[in-house]
Image (cartoon, rainbow, N blue to C red):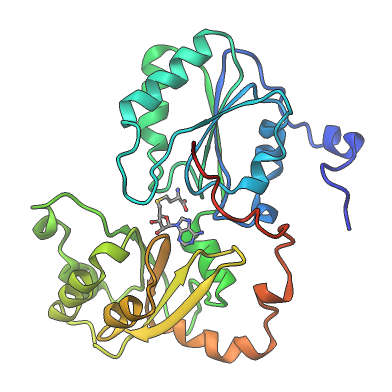
Length: 286
Ligand code: SAH
């Protein structure tokens, strides 16, 4: 097993950047399994003075930070009110102006349904230098961990990544029917709250009720659970099994491949993620 962090020589040869005081770095921490962190994210964690982290960032990841680091929770917890987006951006600006190395650590990729766009825009307007470090997004890495290829040449030549959360009144604008007519698979983020409504709209838009659907809950963590159903039944089945957020919902023919791959695929319960027991839980905020 590689000792981690890797030896300083190897690390140096990658030319990973130094974190200057007064900068803000936004890094994606991936969907959960610490093994999916990028070396850039590890490099940032090892230098930051202050880390503002989201609910979907896992405890084991924060252990890569320096012992003197200040950790600030800045995410949603179970649907309860989160710090306002504006407040988070203002806090980043304030900390940077105080001369700290500020790491904003987000689940998945900061620019995929992660509000990284809003935060970097706020920083740019305030004249604060920033860097964005991509992360593996849950919609793609989560499917892979569930043994579902996002694309195969036999089934689909693209995918739609979309959020199930939208403001009341925007339903008509979103037009699930129009998405259904593309016949491309849908990979739904934040979709559990409205799964019944969304699947009904898809069927009304022409999607076959028998089209396969997978719900991947807590993807890439030891608590990963996968439910395979179809568009007509998935909302009820997920409710019956108590599968809520965070979950990725994949809708499309490619879901069928999972069954064929599964007998030989090494699963998480075989110990692949290497996460110490108990440390996979999202960090409990104070
Ligand atoms: N920036 C993140 C997405 C944030 S939106 C990314 O790129 O992955 C939050 C949504 O992401 C959740 O509602 C859920 O749909 C999805 N998500 C994030 N982590 C997940 C995980 N470990 N398992 C399943 N879904 C996850």
